[in-house]
Structure formats: C-alpha cells, structure tokens
Amino acid sequence: MKHVSQNKADENGVMEAAFINEDFLLSNETAKILYYQYAKDLPIIDYHNHLPPDEIAGNKKFKNLTEIWLKGDHYKWRAMRAHGINEKYITGDASDEEKFLQWAKVVPYTIRNPLFHWTHLELQNPFGILEYLNESTASSIYNHCNALLEKDNFSTRSLLQHFKVEMVGTTDDPCDDLAAHRQLAVEGFATKVLPSFRPDKACVIQHRPVFIEYIRRLEKSSGVRITDIPSFLTALQKRVDYFHENGCRVSDHGFQQLPSSFVLSTAAEKEFADFISSENAKPFSEPEAFFGFILIQLCRMYHAKGWVQQFHLGALRNNNSRMLRVLGPDTGFDSIADISQAASMSRFFDELDNTSQLTKTILYNLNPADNELFATMTGNFNDGTIKGKIQFGSGWWFLDQKDGMEKQLNALSNMGLVSSFIGMITDSRSFLSYSRHEYFRRVLCNLFGAEMERGELPNDEKWIGEIVQNICYYNAKDYFNV
Image (cartoon, rainbow, N blue to C red; front, top):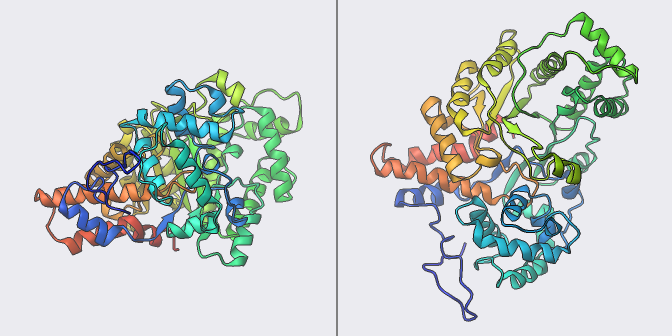
C-alpha cells in the first residue's frame, strides 16, 4: 500500500484519501509492529461467506465496477436510500454506469459509517486508487477500474489468490448439486472452495406452499420419496452424506433465535404426513416443535460427521412489507432484533451436550446488547476436548465494523479466552470484501498495542505477536483442519 503522509492534491487537483495510509487504525507504535510484522501478510481462511461458487469455477471476469461492487450489496443500497437516491439507481433499470455515479455521489456522505472506510480500502486494494470517491472523481475511477477488470488478474480466481485466500467456505442449500465445488476439486485450484450446509428451509413449516415446494426439491436431490418424518430425515441425511463426500465440514443456520422445544408428538408426526400429502391440509399446529426437532436431528448428524456448526442469531428480516412485495427478500430491509436469546440457547445446547452430541459450534450475535450473554454461553459448553470448541463468532452484519469488532473482542476477552478466537469472516457476496480481514487485523493489533503501551499487557512483542497470528489465521486453520 502506498504511504501518503498528508492530505494533498495531485496535479489535477484531485484529493488523495490520505487518511487510509500505512498507519490507518494503528494509533501507536506497538500496534504498527504487531500488524506489519505478525498479522499483515498471513493467508486468509474465510470460513463463512456467500460467494457464488459457480463464478469461481467459471473464473468469471466482471464487465464493470458496478457488477463486482454494487450488485447485491445491501449495505450500499441502504446508504443510497437514506441519502434519497431513487430506487431506479439502486435495484432498478438504470444503467450500471448511472448506478455507480449515483453511489459515488453518496460516498462523501457516508462519513463515520464503515462504508466510507471499506469503500476506500477496496479501491486501494486491488485497484490502486488513492483518491477519494466522489462525484468529481467517479468517472475516472469507474473507467480505470473497468479497464483493470478486463485483465486476467482480476478474474474471480485471480482475486482470491491476490488476497491470499487459503480457504473459502461458501453457503449452499442441501439441494444444491455442488457441481462447481466438484469441478474446482478436480482441477486442484489452489484456494480450497468448500461447501457449507444451510438447511434453514427444511426447518420452517409455517408457509405450506413454500415448504411443499422445498420438499419436492429435496426429494429430487436425495432420491427419497418423502411421506413422513422418518423419510424426511432420511432425505436430509443423504444430503449431509453427499455434502460430506464433496468436502463439506461446516453447516450454517440463520434464525432469530434457537428453538426451545425439541419433541415432536406422535400426533404431530401423523399430522406432518397428512400436511405434505393433502392440498387441503390446515396449517401445521406445532411449527416451533417441528423446528426444534428437525434442527436437533440435523445437529446430531453434524456431530456424527465431525462438522462445525454455525448459528447466526438475532436478525429481524423483511421489515418493510411493501418493499418485500416489490423487490423480494434480502434487498436491504432487515435489522437487529431484540429477541430473548439466553434460555432457549441454553436448552438447545444442553439437549445436545447431554447425549455427548454437541459438535464444534460458532455463535454469531447481531444485537450488541447480547455480547456478554453470547460470550458467557460459549463457556457453558466448552468441555476441554477441543481448544475453543464453542466460539463466540466475529462481529456479524451490522456489527462487522470497528466499534462492533472491538465490543465483540472485549466481551470475549472479559468472559472467555480471546487467544482461542478463530477470527474474522467476510460474510459477503463480493470478491472485493477481503479488505474486511485487513480492517479486522488493524483493529485487533491496535487494541493489543494500545494496552501493551499502557502497561495493561506485557510488553513482549513475540508473545503477543503469536497470539495475534493465532487469532488472524492459525486458530481457524486448526479448528477447520485446513
């Protein structure tokens, strides 16, 4: 990264983004030592993201900066709406260049939002842009980046190699055929691209047409005719087996909260058989018990395979029903929920631990008010068999910024062992989001460095540097056996 010592204009009067310099977020000399000598050049194990595996398998090259950077980015969409940008330029029918120019107009007004940092980090690496993005620089930046995107070293695979990504954990439905993963495995691509099992749709029975459609997909992919609960579980087990055969070692789930009921009555089992066979079936009477029963059975399957299970908890989704009708889900209208988490989470993990079927688990919290709750919950079920068996996961979604990262790190430090933490993820659909690992590493090193200089931690660079390296890379490498 080019060092810029002060704000200055180039010969064209364009202001450089001088604050994103070599010392960005590193407020003390010890932090700089920890970052540059221990953290900066480590590979990345991105064990949870939403990158499309087919785009990696096809080694896709993006036609322009909007396609690689703006499409599907709910963070940017929310900021544009907040600034009064018409939906035409966000998800509508405006041209890609028009959408980018509208985004560029918004960027100066994202000041103090993490988007301001991320935007300029991502322009610097990999595009080498040191200018601020704004209305006056938009066209030149757009054209410069588009020219680079035509080059082979800006394809999806090349970008992963550029960012030293050692492992990518994609997020995949149980019905997916994993063709892209199989292709990449056969080709021996240097970055491991491994599937993650995301069976949320199999657990939610409230909306019969949606659930029945999913049942049909599951029947087709598993080769099992589903007529009752046992055959439903057999179909899911077959998909777990298939994913395992194709390199999967991780599951993932996104719910408001974990279920607190896990027993499905005989009457409910009979009702399920009628529910999936009769078009005139009434709504299922025990959706929460069904959710809990199926999820517990899945978790037992994961334990038998030695997988890691992930739970993303606390999102309140699709708040804007009007925009849900217009644009569909996952378009930027989700927020933090104020759900009571502790009791159900405790009961859920105790149910699995009681039969020694609790596998390695990562808990992601979306409500910062619950950080200490999540951090202490992990300690209830660590059993000494595996270092950091139950993890308090990195700051997620609305919390994957400096303040959220620091709060998560502090809660984990105070309530558990931050030295066993498996570090950052991108949780992103963008191949440019790997700057979030740089961002996290800078925040982490600054936190440790400041406390070393204040005398709150030992002034032992080698000792603390090794802990930093473990958090950034080695703990995840051991945890996922990659």
